[in-house]
Amino acid sequence: MDADAKMTAIHVPAGIIAAVASFYVSNGSIPTLGENQAMGTFLGLVILLITGNIAERIIGKEEAGGFKGWLWSGIVPFLFIWFVVWAMLITSVTIT
Image (cartoon, rainbow, N blue to C red):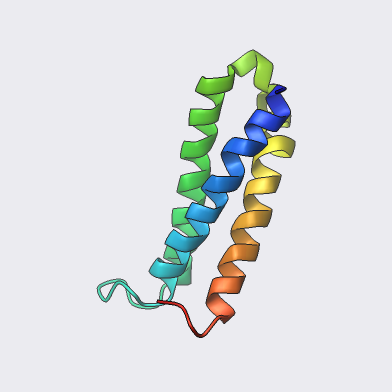
């Protein structure tokens, strides 16, 4: 498997995890936070940065292609999956 596929394979499940975590933070499931979409967004971005560092260590900095490689093979798939799953969770009524 090449570096781009590995990078994407690491970031897509992380995007799903970030979406679920963002949903629980933003919909008021945690009473102390209330309904806080900004905190949900911040949590997703933190998960993205952690995932990027983990992927860089697994794949290697040179093989990953630097920021450009991370942008197209990591950030774009992560953001797409994160926003789509988060939107699906927010609009669903039968969650929990």
